[in-house]
Image 1 (cartoon, one colour):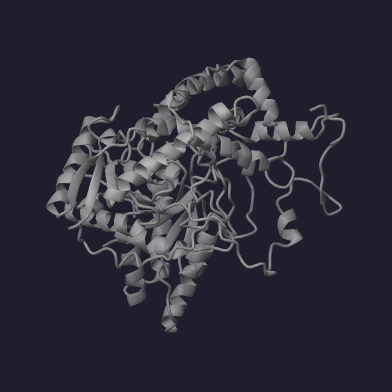
Image 2: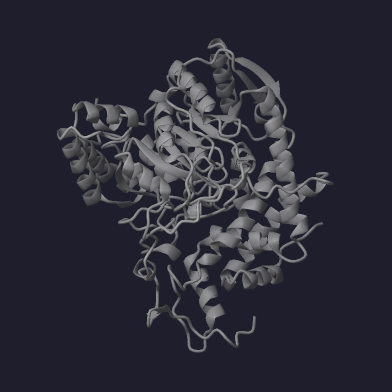
Amino acid sequence: MTASDRTVTECAAAIAAGDVSSVAVTEAALARVAALDGKLNSHLHVDADGALATARQIDRDRAAGRALGPLAGVPISLKDNIAATGMPMTAGSRILQGYQPPFDATVTARLKAAGAVLLGKTNLDEFAMGSSSESSAFGPVRNPWDLGRVPGGSSGGSAAAVAAGLVPGALGTDTGGSIRQPAALCGIVGLKPGYGRVSRYGAVAYASSLDQIGPLTRTVRDAARLLQVIGGADPRDSTCSHAPMPDLEAALTGEVRGLRLGVPREYLQDAQGLDPAVRAAVQGAIQVLRELGAEIVEVSLPHTRLCIATYYLIATAEASANLARYDGVRFGHRAALRSGDGIDDLYASSRGEGFGAEVKRRILLGTFALSAGYHDAYYKKACQVRRLIHDELLAALRTCDALLGPTSPVPAWPIGGKSGNPLEMYLMDVFTLSANLAGLPGLAVPLPLHPSGLPIGLQLLGRPMDEATLLRIGDAYTRASGTDLLRPTLGDAP
Amino acid sequence: MSTRADAAMVAHMARLARLQVGADETAGLVRDLSAILGYVEELQTVDTANVEPMIHAAQHGTPLRADVVQPGLTPEDIRGNAPAMEAGSFAVPRVLGQGT
């Protein structure tokens, strides 16, 4: 087994047992980044010195017989909209170029306390606004399965890095599918926890009623390990739930007998734009779960098609407010002033220079949805439809333990293939948005490869805060189908 | 309600958002926002009479922490990222007399 084959939990176990040192694992990860990331562009910053210093400390702790945390010595990267001291944070935007966060996000502090080796910061769509990781100000991320294709987004750097074996695990953020969709398009596992499961303190706010931080990993067990570490109540985020966190790895029993799984017809037979081979792969997964003993029932979510319009009004409205903080005064890019310029010129020119096209589009759309004369017809209307979407999902989840369907309607598309048409890109999110709108947990796990050789994903949606059941189903399915073993071929990299 | 984006609408939103939009960007924004606003029209077909708007997903409430003094960021931490400082304060150009 080479270093790049180890999962998070395997890596932690090997280090704890003394089979390998954290320094060796970290050096292997750095060597793989050096060999492959020129092509993938998955990382915006690599903290080799900091990572090796942590790795040496973990190795000393082990040698001294000190207790090791659940991630001791394991390299983990953070999406570059999650703050970590000692590393710059750009959120993929020129407006934050050079910004040095003076504090750790709560998830960063918890990873450190668990012994993780923070390797670097991963590339993303600017301010997490995108489904392809092409809107980064620092160049597109490439899919390790086909370098001519997108990795999905917006956590595309985290997904590409994990799929390519640069790191065994990474964190991302998910506002409308930004963890699950790139996980699916890169053939790995992505978990969006229920809203409030993970503190958002230190994550760059995009749409605060929808944003959640979560893990991207190769196995469901790894996702459970990472959520166990980063989740739980936080006095710094009042929207963070005080609900008790169960033992997530203990939930991975491999047993799905007695579970009732709903298949929304709008996600499968009635889904528009769904690739027929994706549909067939989901049907194959349903068969696997049925053979494992789960009961499968059909359900209906008639509001599914409305999720896109609802999401793109609510998310952009919240973004237009959240991004008001980038004003060229306290941090971030400041435009050069011309003689006679006042404060409004400073705001407008700093923001005009600092934000890219998709961010401007969303700020303007969100400003419109909140503006006088349009607020009730757009923002309020969308919030009312959000309630209907929420109620419909919860009704289905009263009779089902989880819902399942495809994560993305299609496999990864060519770079540039949809970037000229924002609306066409938004339509790719049809299956992932409902979890954010309703605040439910969502888990993407790999399906068998598409006939094109590209990865695709199964999505599981669960009851509020019931990540444990999703992880249990996802773990049973991936181990039964072997889809947790898919790896791209990347030449003879170390 | 049917609303189409045009150059005047884009300019108005850009002013409200304090966002400079270049002359070369306007036509593309009008095209894209028109397509998106046309798409979201479908929400108007939904009967939402007596539906309470859902403005947040935090259905579990927002518990407050104990009101206890704790260490926080220092002024130096905050100033470190400022683009312009004068005498320990953030420096900005003329604020009064801007006709907004």
